[in-house]
Image (cartoon, rainbow over all chains, first blue to last red; front, side):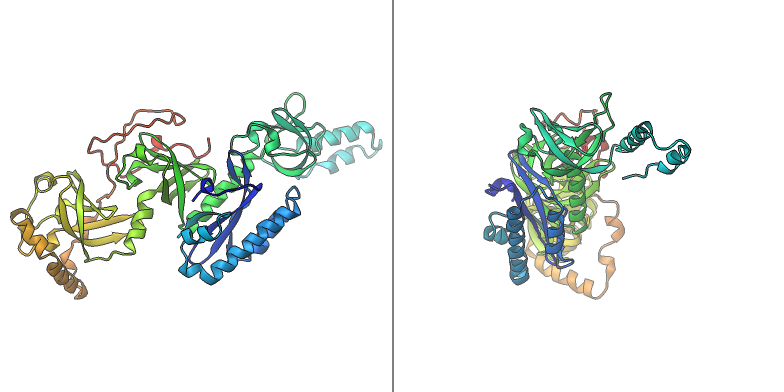
Length: 107
Length: 361
């Protein structure tokens, strides 16, 4: 379930922790030898994770707008899917739906 | 930015005006306040073969060497930085004799990594990580870029430790301590917790004997192991579990306690004996009547009869098993794949401090 199994060609990857009460989102920076943590985890719906993630990315002006939009759109999709199906979907099933996202943990 | 004691400097010079020398002195003072540990914004202005020069507003350009660019190995600085981009940098060391500061991104990433594992621990999340090495004490994994350690006593697998290398394991956090540079995880807790969702006290399950210790037998019940303490084998006195069981014996056991917090499952055959001592005299009869006896046990539990199990008997019992700890001092960085399969009786309740490698290399 680590990055190894996920095909990544962009500089960044969305990381997700699939919990019962929340879904946590973070962004990793991808280099050839691995990924490194770029942001903390933001928990939805405990807080406005999407906005927090956007604010954090906006602080980093070396990330292009296109890259930000791509990450935030993915975040939207993951949050929506969790809202609808979170309770009946395992992390493994969610991983299959979002192969480009790294699912790193669950309850 | 820390305050500079400008007022004092200016006051002293009130009578003679503000000279270039004063200005230079002020700059020096200001410059001095880039102290190690600060995080500053900087702009890449020159890419070098083994690093990059960064303008952080100091008199002299700061330098970030290639090994400080990431928590991962970087061969070419261009993998991480590009000319003219502005990033956050951690000030790693004070100015050298040329007035140059050394910067790091790696340190910022470590700080974030620790923050993340603390967040995950708070959620009591199960994370999946790949075992990249084993040593005498346990197995090593990478979690959020940090090096995590799974003590042997917290590995619940039929495979030998060596075979775990390359496997993804579900893990729970045991210890997250940035100050002491320690990240300790448990595979057993992750498995037991999952398994426990389908288990309940008074349930009879089929298991097989995995290991025998002077204080009891470890029974594998579908992938996780529980402890059948010597006092819970039979109503009759037993000198050693070896006299009752052999490794790989199949048997029926009843669950008498589930401790998710510590990842422990306590088992009993004593409570299944139709007549005291049947475990020693007629084991087949015990297993034949196991479900029947379990119903009686449950009725007693519901009736509030707590005398069936003396909780004191369970106190001080550690379910940690198969710990083979040698107290030889060893170099933490030297990762050796040593698997000891001998069933020594070293029964460690606490983790051996020396065997826990540091989370940040």
